[in-house]
Amino acid sequence: MDTFVASVAMLALIKKFIDFSKYVTAKDINGAVTQLFVWAAGVLAVFLYANTDWAETITYGALTLADMNGASLIALGLGLASTASLTTDFIKSRDESDSAAMPPLIK
Image (tube, rainbow, N blue to C red):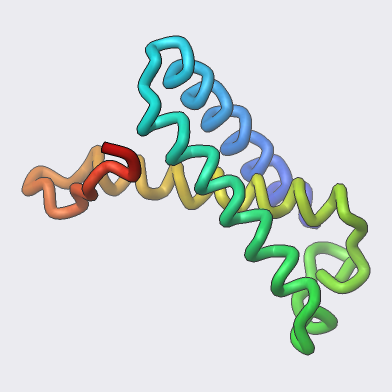
């Protein structure tokens, strides 16, 4: 994986882990469960794609998705999911009309 891309993914994961910790500390069950769900979805998606016919064509640095070990796939899934979560946070912070509002995962 490119150093820049890996660094962005790690920074996103660190930021979202801090956010998750704040949700837990504040007893915000919806926020905590939503972040866990995002991470699980990211890891599941990466494992799914690693087992498709396209896995040999998806590359991160010198490795294809099919060549990555389990820890690499988990790290990639967490990083991609955290980056997606940060992107959603950014969109919400810029959306003055609240059009990006979503219902809570847990009521």
